[in-house]
Image (cartoon, rainbow, N blue to C red; front, side, top):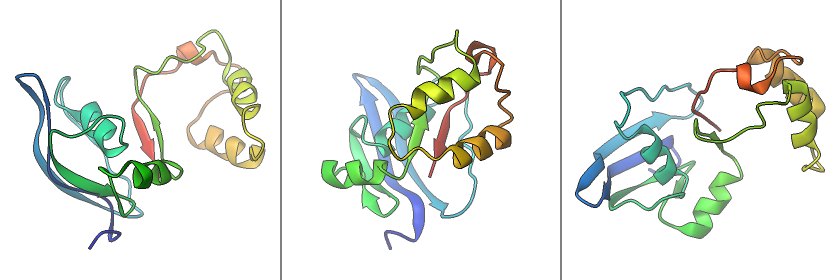
Length: 143
């Protein structure tokens, strides 16, 4: 039943021309757990995440994220209100320190919660004075 899992896919497939980037992926990710998405370069990890977030359409198959169908644009937009994605190809302001980037980002949100930002900064061990460009690139998807 949709909603029992944070992520559920059924034969999710993506073709780019003759190249099959994702092939009939069926998976279920339980709610309230941490799950890693591992694979070599070109294995389809980023393509899968982009399909789950509605950033690209599957060639076949489907799925649900947070109980919402990935193929429905309205439902997908609503789901993205509860998810965050930072891909390794996302350009950040590498010349800024972590502290400067947090201040910059906070200025875009009227409901920014500094206590939560500070807790996450500690959790992910992000030193305030360190330049963003000194941090490693990681793909993260958080609900």
